[in-house]
Image: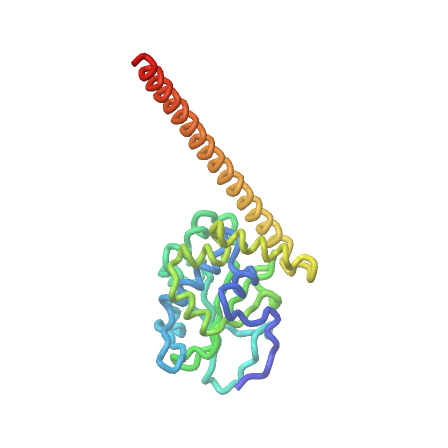
Length: 264
């Protein structure tokens, strides 16, 4: 039903794939929140792992609208009318009033930073729909400095397994695991160790902005480690001081007892 097209960004099968893709970050981008909303409130799975849409994209729910694929960043559909592409994620309510029905956490930074439209409104989800059945899900983003064209290098097919994994998470946990809110100290250390082990064998595949984010995360991790070490030293000093004081008290007691016995 489609003419094959290579998805340059590759397929996202795991949360780690999503993290490495850089999709939806850094702040104020909204793609990760949009994907969380899509997984938890827009689609369901049946017992055969088929994905079904819960809203009506063809009627414009949540700002869904037809995606023409004129740039051919996705496989070209055969024009029999049974399968169509729909996109969601444009937060501009002047063009798509129903986008205001998206969850507040999706729209948050767009509304807080109206002057940064190109970053806070650049991410999209595109679905291939056959009646109510979702045949494929893609994430993409507008090219920097261009409000019209999507970036084929940052267009990814999202596997149903990844969508299922997202459904098992709370929003905060999802954003931490995907690097948006800053991962936990444990995850930072694990990623830092993995990065160090990868240095001799292969260069980093991250973009410049991702390297900056990566360096910032490592810097924050180092600061937290230094703080933990300082706290540990402080606790150790307090314990040592207590032991010394206790020893002095014991010596005083022993000396007093011996002196008393000597007088007897």
